[in-house]
Amino acid sequence: MGHLVLVAAELQPFLAPDQLAGLDVTWLPAGAPTPTGDFVALVPLLSRWVGGTELKHLPKLKIVANCAVGHDNVDVVAAELRGVMVTNTPDVLTDATADLAWALILACARRVVEGTELVKGGTWTGWHPELLLGIELRGRTLGLLGAGRIGQAVGRRAVPFGMRILYTARQPRPDFEHDTGAVRVERSRLFTESDVLSLHVPSLPETKGVINAETLARMKPTAILINTARGDLIREEALALALEEGRLGAAGLDVYLEEPRIHPRLRAAPRTVLLPHIGSATRETRRQMAAMAVANLQAVLKGDPPLTPVFG
Ligand code: GLV
Image (cartoon, rainbow, N blue to C red; front, side):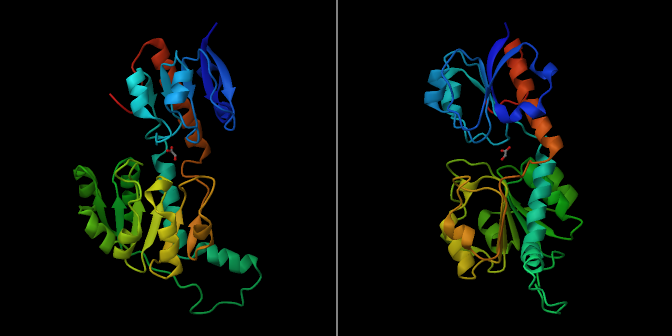
C-alpha cells in the first residue's frame, strides 16, 4: 500500500499517474473540510486554512506541500513546532504573475475595461479626440513595494516601456538595479513618487494593511495601484473611498481580503479593474505548480530534503 496522502481534488487534471507513484491519494475537494486520519502529506490549495486544529487532526503528517507561492493559508509556526515541513511553489509562477500585473497596469493606464464596456454596451458614438484618455507610461515612475522574484520580473518588464523604477526591499538587489536602473528607496518616497505602485510583498503581520487611508493620502491623485500579491495588504474600504473621492487614479486588483467576497464598496468603486485571483492561471504554470507540490511531497516521503521549504 502507498503512502496515505490528501491532495486537492482540483489538481487532479494537472497530475499524471507517474507523479503519484507510491501514493494512496484521497482527493480533497475545496469545499470539503480537512479530514482526520493517518495521512502523511497534504497538498492544499491556497483557499484551505491549515492551522493548529487541522494539524492536530492529522497526527502522522510530515509535510504540507502548499500549491501556491504564498503560504499565508498555513500556520507555519504551528507546523514547525509539530515538525511538519511546509513547502511552496516559487519560480514557476513568476512570469505568469508578472504578466498579469502588466495586464492590470496597461488596462488601468489605457482604460481598457471602460472601452470594452462602451463598445459592448452599444453606446460608442465614434472616434473622438478626448475619448477615454489615459496616461502614457514612458517617462513615468513604477514603484515596486517588494522586489522578490515577482516584483523584479514586473520591474524588468518596465524597461522597454521606458519607465523609471523605484523599489523597496529589505536587501538591495544589485543585479536588478544594474539591469533596470531601479533605485532602492524608503517607503515614503515610493508612495509619493510612484505613478504606478505595484505590491509584491508577502502577507505578514507587518505588511497587512500597508495600503491604508494614511498611505493612500500620500500617493499622487493620478496614481495607479496594482495588487497581484495578497488582498490583506490593502484596507479595501479606504481604497474604495480614495477612488470615489478622486484621490487615486485607478486600481487594478487580482486579490482581495475575503475571497471570493469583495468589499461591496470596492466592487462599486470607479476606475477599477477587478480580476478573480488569476495571477498564476496559465496552463503551463498551473501544471508546474502541481508538479512542484507533488515533487516536494515525494522527496520528503522518500526521506530527502524538500525542494522548496518555506522555513529551515
Ligand atoms: C497565488 O496567489 C500564489 O500564492 O501562488
